[in-house]
Amino acid sequence: MLDRISVIFAFLQQDGVMKLDVIRLVRGKNGMRVEEVVQEVIAGDIGEMKLKEPILFVVAGHGIIRKVFHEEDEDGIRRVTENEDIIWERFDRDDGERVICFTRRDKIVLLEEELHGYQVPVIETCLWGVRPGEEILPANRERVCESAIGLAERFYHRGVTWSDLLKGGKRGDSLAALIAGKIKLVALLCLLGLLVVNYMWNTSVREKYASLQLEIASLERDVSNREELSREMERVVREFEGSGTGRVSVVLDRVVALVPPAVNLDMLVVNPLLKGLEEGKSVVTREGCLELSGVTADPGQVTLFTGSLSSSAFARQVKLVSLDRNRETGWFNFKIWIGL
Image (tube, rainbow, N blue to C red; front, side):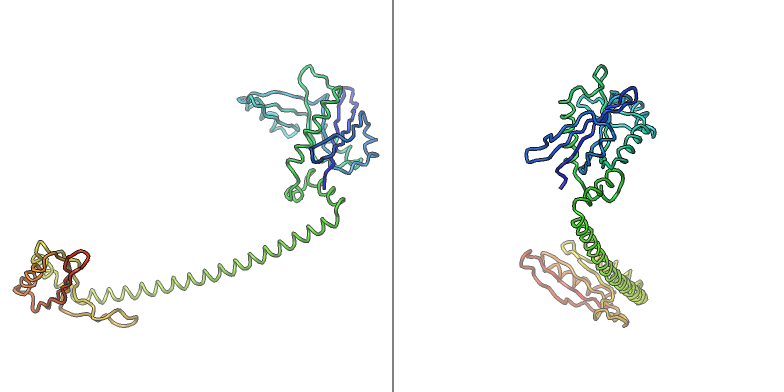
């Protein structure tokens, strides 16, 4: 779409005269090539050339200072880059040194305003400083063309993004004007496409918002259910604590003292539940009862244990509820009820 680009070199003279060179380039399959070179054009003739392609404006000559800074000279660099009255451009070299070309901002602004008056669409303004001893005037035309090609390649490498067009500024406004002038219908379709994308995006956001609202409502219900369950558990615990389990603490000590060394207790329950917990109903337990369960490698130890419990003074009744062998481990699992 923007296959043509022009580079205008403004060579400033000490007497205030400005000489302009215009290099018009075309981007092809093999890269950039120079299509036309117009030398020493006066500013008034620029408007008659009717340049409709992107323009890169390069200012060189008197008043453009080129200075090399070492990497550690941060103060010197800041004195240039943080001065609002100075326009500058920096180039980092492979040896760590930094080359900064700079000049007064008002000088560049005046040149840009003059070109703007001739309807020249300047996209970027660059500074071209020369080394001490080099010729300021544009005597080396080959070098000028090489620089123009390099600047054009840099422009195309950066490309044109929606961010450039939307944020405005010199680059954005000029590019937007060029594109709008070349493809007004396509620009309108792109705008329509943006509106469609924006509509779809807003629709997606609304759907996600509705989904999040449903998730929040579900979480609120879950929290409410958890709070209700917590209150129910607290009620069960209070009822269980009031069932008199504290009175059998001495009995528990005696039961533990009678456990044979070869027997491992897994669980000891005071007043076990007769049935599962039901919401809104009181806890139903087997009052005055202990429930023991454990494992042993010797079933005879279970018999010895039940005998010791039966002969104790605290046990009113001892019942071996189950004694099963685990086929995988060979150990015996047992359960005993003790009536107090």
